[in-house]
Amino acid sequence: MSNGTNDVSGAISNLFDTVGKLAQQQVELLNSGIKTATSLIEPLGKTATELAGNLVNALSQVLQTVSSAIAKK
Image (cartoon, rainbow, N blue to C red; front, side, top):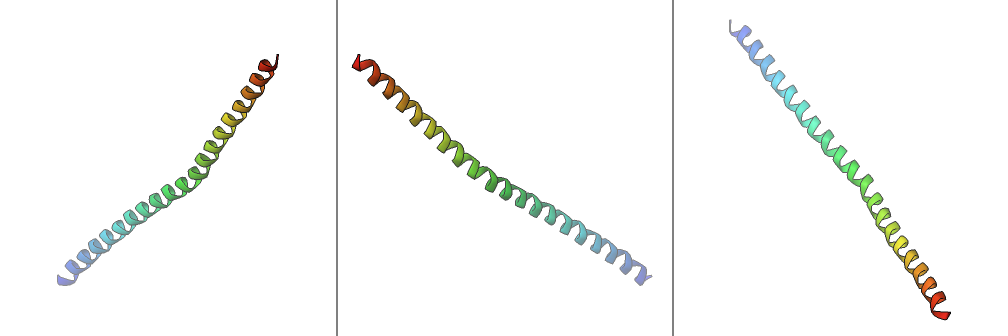
């Protein structure tokens, strides 16, 4: 009888080990996905900020040009 109990106990132990490993892998996969998304979004944010700054500078130059053209008349 002892062997039957040990087999069931071992099987349950193995099952819990497997479930624990699967849960850990899912957490690691999620963590990796978050890191990847962050590394993709970061350059896009920087580029968008630079683009907005360049646009503001361009509009400022246009307004200065228009202002100087109006002021000369």
